[in-house]
Image 1 (cartoon, rainbow over the protein chains, first blue to last red):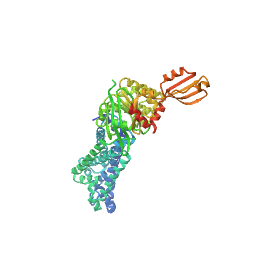
Image 2 (tube, chains in turn orange, blue):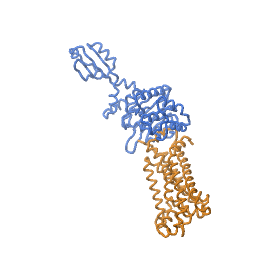
Image 3 (cartoon, rainbow over the protein chains, first blue to last red):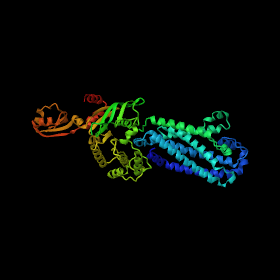
Image 4 (cartoon, helix red, strand yellow):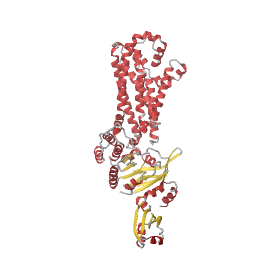
Length: 271
Length: 309
């Protein structure tokens, strides 16, 4: 592996990674603190509102039962749209940098003028993507652990359960990243690549949402990436969703490979 | 050193859908050569360079650089190539020094010392982030990054753009020294004067096709010179018929002006036998020759010229 390419990738993406890691730390800290401590006080009233119940069920992808116990609320902290938006933003922003971003800003001429193959560049970007994603999620986990300090010790999920959620979310991150790498490899404009990936994720989010109360959507919900990310059952049972994680990781790997092949064969034209 | 082909293209074609980038382009650049690649904007210069660097796959034909296939072996090719793009863009958050360090790591060589030497020569502050650099400073940095590893082949696309005249002189001097040490320079430009100042061989491309490829001296020899003859008297002017190697365009006030189509020595010998008061012969007028290459109407004629040579 070319160390220079790794350093270049880290240097080029450091600011956005630090920013989003801090954002996830803050978001998870706040959600981890606010949801279990404040919302349990209004649990009964909130569950009387059908719309609220539907929203929570749709977000979690499973029935929430008759009361909002801390476990349910902790799970909400991991499927909250803000959290998903931060994680997806990192994946999309990072994975559309090469080649679409580099072509868009014209720096690919200098980069590919160096003695590196396109696969070298692609793999180096991927390694940094995987490591920085881990960092961002670990910051989220740290924020969450700090946030739920106010919850009774016996009602807090164990580290193993939280790690299971983070691992599942990481697989979702990998799937989104793989998709973004493929779209980026096929595009010469970063804005277009970002818009396409964002559109696909929005569709995935809405499909998963609708599937909770609309049967036609339920029939095709398996195509939604979010169908394979459901923290609440994991928190309840403590069993890691290995099959879901494999689906997400497999999807990411296939997309990534297709992206790499496309990038290696395509013409690079900045003018 | 000379005689080894560093760049060879054989009937190279590159099309963008219906549009032609380059058509049937055959070139050969020898080691140690200062090769000028000249053509108007959109002629196919940058497309040729992009094929040579493996950014574009040829539609037809073949290109080899340093004996390796430009598409298949692109990574190995660029071990010994330095490249300055025409529209240079660098990572804006990084400083010159950082870029030099990272490029050195990628090339697996220490470029700090040679890079800093070049920065001193080109008067560039390497501690400034790229986003705070002027266009000229960025161009200097691009040159340093292309030159620091002392490549066997240097491909420069419009390198003097945004450089001041002093820096242009410095660069040309540096490139000449590199060529004298066996490095090959492939210098792309649309400006004749800078190619003329540096290169010893010139290829002209127009609408994707090669319309000329010969040593600068041969082109100079073919280029016409302007002349001015001042006759001693009006009567002398009126009585003398212009020889075949003079194209007289103006005759007034005892003065002839026009183009010399033959050799300067012919004119000198002829003039010595005439009642002439003064005579001036200009340098070969390459501009007008190249304007003919560039002109639509001149292309067919130049084709015939190239094929015949």
